[in-house]
Amino acid sequence: MNCPCGSAKVHPQQTPNPDPGRTNRPDAEARSVRVWSFRAGLPMDGGLNMPMTYQPFRITGEDRPGPWLVTCDHATNTIPAAIRDGSLGLGQADMGRHIAYDPGAAGVSFCLGEALGAPVVTSNFSRLVIDPNRGEDDPTLLMRIYDGTVIPGNRFADSDELAHRLTLCYRPYHDAVARVAARHPDPAICAVHSFTPRLRGRAPRPWHVGVLHSYRDSRLAHALIARLTAEGDIVVGDNEPYGGHLPGDSIDRHALSAGRANVLIELRQDLIETLADQRAWARRLAPLLQAALADIGQSPNMQHERSGR
Image 1 (cartoon, rainbow, N blue to C red):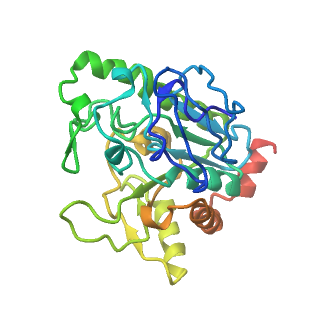
Image 2: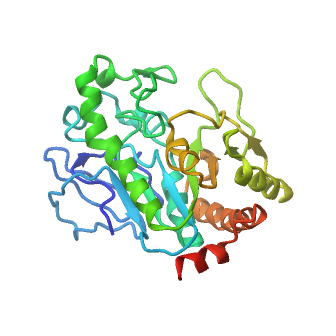
């Protein structure tokens, strides 16, 4: 199992925690961390602090033969130690908000990968360090203010600092996604995100699930929207709460540019707060995703035959 934390300062009470009975406790004094298993909620090092080499991504189930690749761009709120000694100057309350990561999305991704028999690639750095779901030339790649909160550690970040973060975090993560995608013939990419029920000063968001897509390829998204809507009890947002086309984002980079079927799923965060919630949504989404893939004529069985598995 790849290390979910690495040599970084983790904000434990806010780091994606699929097990509500687990308590994280980092070593704040040293550049070593207590590494926790997402699955079991147990310290992987037997309770000892072990120096770990920082890795900006985690790959789970790389050899799974399914026709899918699950990605999670905003999986953790980790600040690597090499970035301003592991702090951007925010308190734990802010690091636990959606501005730092997508709460619940990592747990859904791991469970969805299991249900689909698919590899999962998750990031291991906060979106406040650098946002992997933005193009390298996007002005929001490194945010100085987010949902009304000033990010002190980014306020005076210059081009050298941006280049450092691109090299340390952003590019290795995308290289990992590209490598895993290339190992599987024509994988359909499912990106998992979560959204806050309400932005500051805005109206509540009514959707349970948002399905985001680009005009360049909406096949799988439209098929999934139809399947979700047919369930009868799910409020589905079509390109809500955000528009789905952003040049240079992860789907653009790894799916649209390569002609791969794709969909980006946004789950409302209050619906995936616990491991039980995350598992339930993953198990509900998996057969709908498989059916939607078949609806567009990209049969999972056909893909397995092409892969020789």
